[in-house]
Length: 237
Image (cartoon, rainbow, N blue to C red; front, side, top):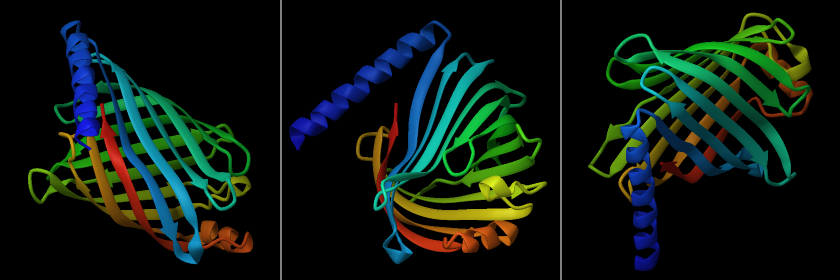
């Protein structure tokens, strides 16, 4: 174990030095794997889930790539896969404006979206990410993602999170109904094993669909709500 720990420390240190060298030239880059986890839900559903966020650029302009997905382990199929590429620039001390494109697949037909959004820190240091999207079919929707890190000790962190989704018009081909259609709440307890670079965690997630989205999910034989136990780790480089 000591060998692995020393290897992780050396690897993290190398990355930190590399980042510092880039910072001296005015350019920065980073990668955060916010979720890399195994989920066990009601009905014995088992999922591999990931959520990554990476960037490259300067203080004034960054290119940001966000990727997330869910893989159903029992059936060996991708439940969802989303990639967003956007340019991001600060508009105040705590908020950035961003704009770009997003591709969602594979459930139903793929969808391309134009994206405009805000990302930053709300009062009480709540991390927020708000996206307004318009699909290639002209359907508008919005997603709000919030997260807060409560330091129980210097290493032990409790992280509640909430993601809310809504649409201004329905898109039945991909099972999205108009109005407030989906919510996901999570609570994860993590431990900073090596600084903030590696933080294993356990937690729970509750998902629920609403309105037309829930009705169409029922017709497809899917659950409209689900509790899930999660175990995973965060990585920060």
